[in-house]
Image (cartoon, rainbow, N blue to C red):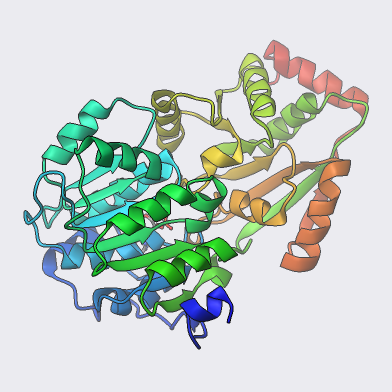
Length: 410
Ligand code: AMP
């Protein structure tokens, strides 16, 4: 029997049920209902409808869902509903969420804080790259929920500032991402230190072998829910490509495209750190409000830049995939691929940053020889329809971008 068979004996993934038109039918207490309303969540998203009942019933779950599908509230609401305010002792949270990146940990913590606020639930985020001190005092404040990245959680555990003895629920968020970022040993170490009586919910966009192996080892007869098909699509997104001219420097062509398309806010995705840093510099030297953000940046710097793009102060964030993964920025008008990624799924994740929840968005890609393969796969396997736009002749691009450099075209 395969690992998957062992883990999910005989179970087909549950299709997402048709959801109710409001949160009304769910057995939720007034403070949680009020928080949902205050957050502007009128209607449950499919993953929330699918997860609510089994999660409230304390079942273990394996949920295939993408970033942006509403999965934080899907696990957050049942957890917050069941928690008892003020029952946690300092350093001994009752719920633990593991996340692959600092940004995601922060984002999940913010969402849970907002949803648990009216109930008086305390949420602390624990991640590396910042001094331990503030996190230690946060833990001393007896939060009911801790959201963290695996490495830093273990640091606190070893120092005795955090304990897992009282954990009732564990969530593995973006499990496949924690695996591919090399956190798997830490994840399993943490799992084995939490009480066996816990409820475990695993969320992942894909279910590779190692993830299923952990599911079979640490989850008890998990219910399997699959809403992945609904989120990883390009519905509502216009996909455009510009074929790169070989005789003009590519950064200049990007400048031309940005000036022509005029996004109000965008992430420009690059495939490497060097490329992102170079393009970030190039754009700001050309007079754009642009900043690069890559994995090599210090935590404080990352947070500052994320804050700037979230508030709309920063128009162009030039980033690599690691940083942008899982980040929710409302109202991103465009996603630009300076280079197409090697894997088509990465494209779908990138463009999922725009056109979120009923809004329309635009994905623009500069395509050269290397990107053609990805483009073909996207067309064939994912039915992405690309609108092809052409750059003007070399001389026109150069004349135009020189004007931008001088500020004449701004
Ligand atoms: P997530 O997948 O948890 O990152 O959520 C993606 C986005 O959906 C976030 O901006 C949430 O604030 C938003 N969201 C979550 N649930 C709902 C809902 N029921 N109605 C509207 N927006 C929601």
